[in-house]
Amino acid sequence: MASLKDIKRKVGAVAKTKQITRAMNMVAASKFKSAQLKMENFRPYAGKFMDVLNSVALRVESMTHPLLTVRDPKKIRVICMTSDRGLCGGFNTNLIKATERFIREKGKEGKEIALISVGRKGRDYFRKKVNVIAQKVDLLSKFDMTLAVSIADEVITPFIKEEYDELYLIYNQFVNVSVQKPTVVRLFPLPSIGQDTEVESDKRLDYVYEPSDEVLLHKLLPMYVHVLVFRALLETSAGENGARMASMDNATSNCEELISTLTLKMNKARQAAITAELMDIVGGTEALSKG
Image (cartoon, rainbow, N blue to C red):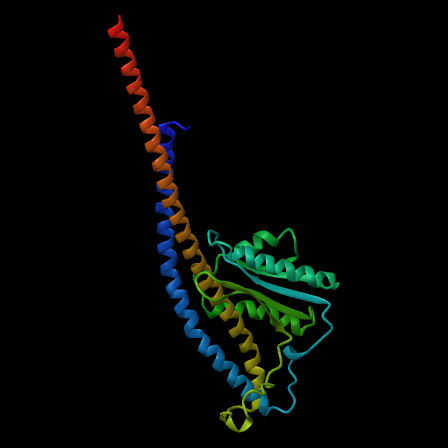
């Protein structure tokens, strides 16, 4: 059995760990509320943007835009969005596994894969495994649309120049605090625009545009990419803080259970020490009375 002093030292160490995890839980909870609010406020905008884009596309008889060009996908690029910091449960692990699985499947098909890493954890993991051609780290703690535009613009021009054939975005879609779903989205070539048949044509809103539909569509398609990337960043931010909040809450509960277990063990050790001392006193007293 461990000595009483060792057990007391363990209890003190676990108590300090509990203070740290509780503080991290509170910080993550504060950041999560802000990130969740931004994400929920942006989702309606993204949906309405898609409605307007579809409405414009339906008015254009022939859509000829470089971002819609379909080529034989020999060269593929992947944007992987992870967090910059750890201690958030399986948030990064699940996403990295999904990315590895996707890269392995495409590799078996003979595709040439290049990775664009957003987040330090993904960069650190993949830099010796995959060709990482670009990285964005230490930017997710505070970002705005500028970051999404920067990421999108760095991939739009090479695609138009035919430096690669397909682009995929892999990120964690926020479901709730405990669940973040790894999601794979094809960005380039863009999915069919204006092919939505769920809404009858006579029930569609008739927007008035200026300039012409063709010019407006060519302006909106790159913006559509900006919106998709920014939404993924918001989902990643909310998911990271939610996962860290849940992880630190579990860690705090585990610390409390461990402290209870160690305290019980410490009490047993103290009682054993007291019993041993009493036995020594009794034994000494009996020896003196016999003498």
